[in-house]
Image: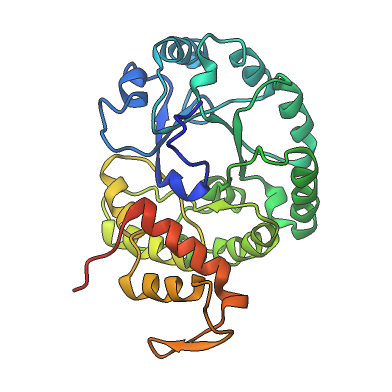
Length: 300
């Protein structure tokens, strides 16, 4: 699992590099030799791998796990199905992984995934919400309740599968468009209000273009405003663009620290904004933690 210095807050995921498990350099990536400073990686055995390449991809995961040492990076494998998860749990060195990404999670397959995990496993899970059921608010509420009942303490974050959800609608985002400027904008809002109040974090959908960093920056800024910290990166060049938006504004940090003071008044003015510790404490704690992980934005 993770080095003890690494927190298990979902805020620490940062930009999670998405890597097909068919690549031959998994060990170099997992050990941070290839991409120093990488906070989290997801080795994919699902959509990024053709069915006839699956045996080779699983063999690559096996070899990688045999070389892993404790580290400061979150290392996940996106499994293909519960059967693949069950087989991976017997791999030597699998305990060095942070956990598993569970694709296309629904209430119907949740039990199969949980049954595939050994009772002694302490791997964290990141289920992905990316099927037609996501558009059914009642289904999402029932899934939330089952996750809280059956997976207490095991869910690091839920992932929003933007491309799969657009595929359900027969759509693909156009150039220059953020995910919030597609029909998924209201869906993401609904997921936030369904899961966040119950302590289940959400990570933001992938941005699948590598030629428009200005739009990526704009999208991540909206992610942050909506409380979505953590986003899949499809190329190392996206990592800095994403994580730069997680830097905390100095004024926000000052307000947060004032709110968190043990002797803070019940309500007060700071930077021409009303501050009320009883209602702003959760925000302030999140701002403080973000600043500890990503740092402070330089004032212009």
